[in-house]
Image 1 (tube, helix red, strand yellow):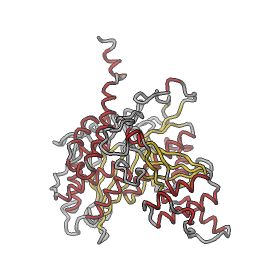
Image 2 (cartoon, one colour):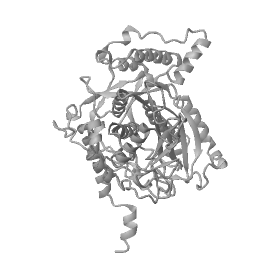
Image 3 (cartoon, one colour):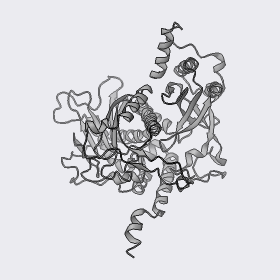
Image 4 (cartoon, one colour):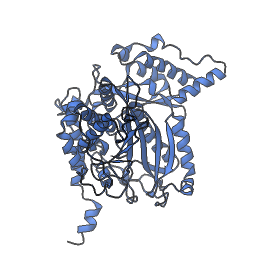
Length: 513
């Protein structure tokens, strides 16, 4: 149960309105599509009962039902209070074509044809998918009046799984990991930029179309840069910092810190480590919340890695990861007490080598935008090649810990903050499990990550997509249909970029030749 629901329940007790346990789901709230297909456990029904109670008590009038698309963005519908009960029984329909679009909103497949080319039935004619709400994810939105918010999974109208639901893809990989006797913990450090928005109405130049987005918002910088962790510079954004803290903690997100980063207009937030699926949900909600809160205060927050005007320091997503043995509750990456020669256990070494071995393919998920590859530069606190180091922040993967340290973990520093968190985390699972399965021997660590004789990370989204296309570990784990779908989406996006005449080209050649 999220904090906003707990707080409402505590107020009920204080007012003499009853105990804190949720009432059973009413008979009228059961039945329908969701029960017929067995999508909910009793825990879901209990959470739904508590959700209904909170809606009644707080006078919630609208609830946002959203699913996370292939790009890690929340899409969905806002329902009125009178429509919520029906949605909790039978789900909500949405066009299946939403799962077949690139970042511009352009369909990458023949969505109206009988054969779409996606490799799985259920998408022809842009027919519907069904959003199945997850009541355990319900939150009260602190910045919007009388509004609730929850996440959904997507299925076909016959109740079968949609293979492109990224939330489900991650859970499936976590189930595979559990079959091997492990659970995964993930911590997130998300860097982002915050600019001041120009006070101007939206003009025609900002209106776009599929395949051709309109002009970006006009903004100005908020900090000068080059002063990492400078307290007074962060104080200059205290109006935003205060509202971010209030909003994110009211959503029961495990916020740990808000920090001033090195680049101009650049901030970072960190969250406490948690179960991998819970962290993925938290990242999705957090990013959307940051953007919404900033916009209401006259700022523009972006998780784009390298926006114009902030080229001196790109933003990244440092993904901390560790495993725990389900049977012994022991930290699986922690070496034995008498193994003082290594920072990682045998399991940890094999997992790490799997991440390195599949780094090029996984980059398509860790860095899924054209822009993100401009971050892979030497001496930038971002990696530029496939190497690991012991507590070295220049390497692609930083290993931290050692014998007796239950916090022994790996920090993958290659991802961008715009990555779909379910796919980014799942890519680590696929890579690491392949390392464990094949008992891969870990290569030597680097002590000079920008001079190491190591293979480079992909220099473009096109390179990463090509690597993913031929990676058999990903095809085995996700299935050919999923890999081919994602490759096609990203290749469509990348080829659109290659056809675009950039500002650089215009400045470089237009006058010269």
